[in-house]
Length: 365
Image 1: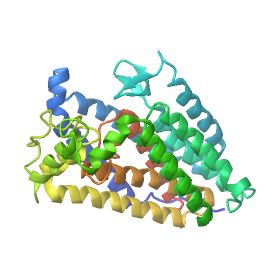
Image 2 (image 1 turned 180 degrees about the horizontal axis):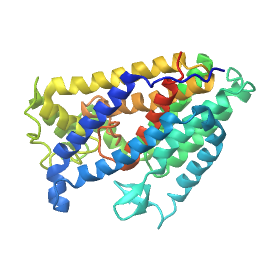
Image 3 (image 1 turned 180 degrees about the vertical axis):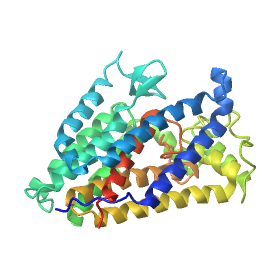
């Protein structure tokens, strides 16, 4: 196997840094009013975001320059640690409840979200496992079911928090790896039907999820309750027009859109920067996904190829869900927009994963 390395994909790097810069500006613009109201400092969110961005960039530089093949030997211990953290966070008194979910470990306002670590840990382990010569993913019982059982276990632990959004991203990226590894479509289709039934069961089991579905279908049926977020998000996007109201000029960030610096930051971006600003962000994500898939097709080994698919899967699934929620095409799930939304764990882990993708690009043919 060739050990030749060259410079990382410059388009990938430009997209990552550009999205990160846009995110820093929008975290300040979208969150300054709330930050001043709650903490007396309009720079509160952006200062913390800058801290995690620096940590994430250091981690990205590290993962970009190590030999990605060495990650294989650590994939199992990393996954075990991720599972342990998912169990620990469920223990009352240890796991911190935020937004109705016991999904955080930490002290005071600083914390980590174990489910974010699981997204990367799972795709790393699956890439190693499914790329081994002894693995025949085309066999249903001995090939496909074991990795799906592992994915299902992780998804179940995340749902106990509960965190449907993060669990869905982990599930979607993992299934993309399984598909890329050569799983038969008829097997996946059969399991997809069973998964859809289970998904409906999860929705019906929790009244708040059912309210989100009904709000998605008709937000005006409960404009001050379940439909409030979608309505206020659309109120932000609509007036943005072609060029927007201007940076910092959002009206919806004044306590209309809940948590405007996190899940619904794209609606504030569209309000301030308009269709042009929103389209620019989407184009950057599209280029990032395109270059990432190019890396997956040209990296010299199966492990690297599956790992690239998994990383791009995390980005793509998360972007599709977040934008879909913001524009009213999907029910509210609580998913951040990669590199743009405020959030320490998600930003640091995303930059770490993208550092691995840049590493893989250095080995591409």
